[in-house]
Image 1 (cartoon, rainbow, N blue to C red):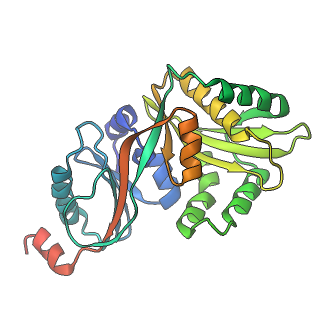
Image 2 (image 1 turned 30 degrees about the horizontal axis):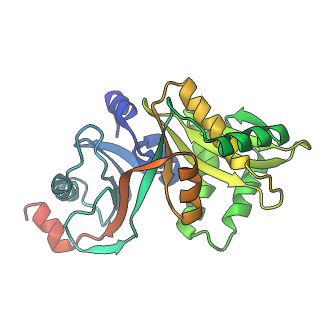
Image 3 (image 1 turned 180 degrees about the horizontal axis):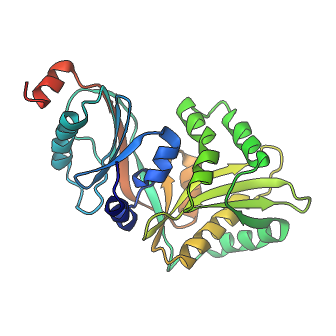
Length: 277
C-alpha cells in the first residue's frame, strides 16, 4: 500500500501515466506499492512492474536486480513489465514491439499556422465544455468505438473502465465537443495528477458525426488547462500507429522515452532461488 509521503513523491516525479496510482487502480483493481523508486501494482498473483524510476536515471542492470527482488518480495506467478528497455533476465513469455512516449513542452508551445487555423475554424462549429463525469452519451461513444474490429481485447477492457476512472479521480478533466445541435462529436480525458506533467489519456470520436479538427480542438483545450495548472509538459502517450503518431507530431510532440513491454512467468525453481531455498 502507499503512504501519504509515497503518494507525494509519485505526484512530484511521475512522467508516464502508468506511474499514476489512481489511473492504474481504476483500470486493474490492483494494489499500488512504491518499491525502490518504482511504482508496482499487485493483483492476485500478477505483478505489474512499472520500470520507469521516479527520481533516479534509468539503469537496465538496476532494473534486473529489482526484478529479482520483486520476485522475492511479492512471489508473483506472472510479471507484466513496462520499461524503457528490457533487461537480460528470465525467460520472457511474450514481448511486444517497441514504442515511445510523446510529449509537448507546454510553456513554449507554438502552433503552426495550418494547425492554428484548423483549431480556430473548428471552434466556430463546435462548443467545448469541461466536465468531471461521463454521461450515458459518452459511454455509448466508448462502446461504439470499442466495437471496431481493429480494437484489441486489452484495449476494450481499459476503455470499459474509463467511466470509473474519471468518476473516482479528481485530477482528471473531461473535455467534450458538441455541434450546433448539442450532439456529442468527440471527447477527451486528460489527467493532471503529477506536478510537472499533464497527460492526454483518452480521445473518442463519433463514428456518425465527423467534424474535421474536433480532436485538435479538444487537445488544445487540454493543453491550455495544463498551462493554467503550471505543468511543464503534456505527455501525449504512445505512438501506437502511424496515424496516431502523425497526429502527435503535427502538434510538435517528440518521443522522449522509449517503451517496451514483456510478460514473465517465474519458474518454480527461480522462485525458490529468489527465496534462498
